[in-house]
Length: 265
Image (cartoon, rainbow, N blue to C red):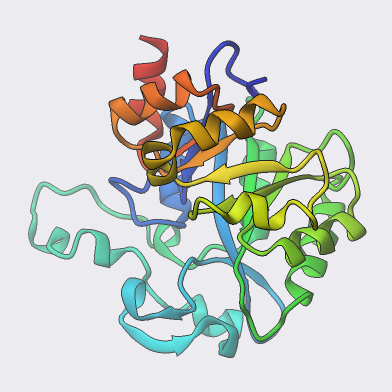
């Protein structure tokens, strides 16, 4: 049932090891891998010149203090930005802080993240969320499948799954790459019932942890029908315990090392 961790949920690093590192940076993902994360989660958006980058928000205000939409900027412009300093704004004043490699704090392309996972000396899976709505609509999924195909990761044995809150986006991926695993993300108690007429039986349910806390019986019912569960964002030990109790296959967490240690301990 668990994608990698036998007898326990797979530990998936949410935007990298993002509790202590700037999210979606190469530094955050390298830290997550070093902590033992079994899979890496990321959000992807398309730049104005057609590159997929790992960014959550539509704009760059939160992570780079820049009032601009990711979709309106070219990759070369994005690469000039520091998207890591916001996480530790006083680091420059700390004489004992380690030197930071600027390359680890830049906007990360999905290609670079895929290369990092491919070249790591142990198997690593990827959970890739396409963000919607976006001005590029279905082009995001098309570009994603094309890139995965370059890596040989669009077939039945791919270490990749695609996630979205948009069932339309997931159906689009299914048409483009029928063998990829799909996760329908949800945060409301009626979301799963609403999407069932449009979903296929093998879709994975991706509820938020708040939904598990508030509606455990609903989650039990979904699980009882044979549906796999991948849950976000699981940072507390009590929530890890709840996921285990409900038969969750993967926990997406900001604290991969800590979560792994708790599950194995």
